[in-house]
Image 1 (spheres, rainbow, N blue to C red):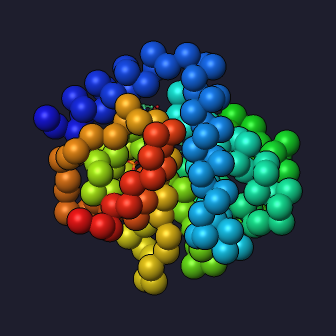
Image 2 (cartoon, helix red, strand yellow):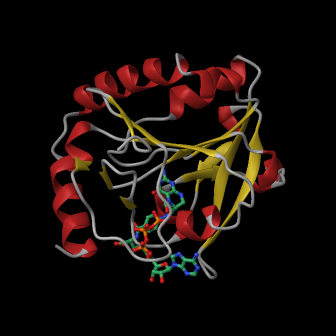
Length: 191
Ligand SMILES: Nc1nc2c(c(=O)[nH]1)N(C=O)[C@@H](CNc1ccc(C(=O)N[C@@H](CCC(=O)O)C(=O)O)cc1)CN2
Ligand SMILES: Nc1ncnc2c1ncn2[C@@H]1O[C@H](COP(=O)(O)OP(=O)(O)OP(=O)(O)O)[C@@H](O)[C@H]1O
């Protein structure tokens, strides 16, 4: 199945989740994340800001800020399909931006050097158990992750219905190390 068809299929399934299930599952996923060494040890965490029926990261962002983590979020540059990263000090600094995704208001943009990031929470529409993912098709994360010289921890957050055995991959795709769902923690590096 090609990426586009798979993306549409899973987006439809995900859209059927009730708001109540999204909150319940997202809370379970967040609690699993907080228990992980890679989260506890991370000083600077890059998180996507969830929209639509994605795993909700708003509480993760607020909680991490209150636990003195440095939280950075992606800013999309649609023209070049590039991501820049900016530090958020309070959730109220965000407003709706491109694609209806929350983004820092202009006056609160504080660009940071991506090499300071210890942990990246990666969004996705479909995840394979080997860590490869299909996103919304912008190639934003693939382009962004390809620029890291040293290894950075990458955790995908997804509902169980978004996980499959395999997804089509291209040469530019960069897999995550771990996927957290409401049902399990998948170690993608283990064969
Ligand atoms: N929460 C969150 N933030 C994120 C991502 C994500 O997947 N989730 N992204 C992950 O990369 C980037 C944004 N990527 C996106 C790319 C396309 C569309 C989208 O809805 N595209 C429409 C066309 C919209 C248009 O072109 O105006 C479509 O495909 O129908 C959304 C997000 C950066 N920030
Ligand atoms: N490292 C890269 N350099 C240049 N172009 C890239 C790179 N990675 C991906 N692309 C381009 O981005 C486009 C979208 O890729 P793909 O369909 O895999 O996106 P996606 O993983 O679904 O999206 P996202 O990463 O935004 O969640 C492709 O046409 C691809 O050519």
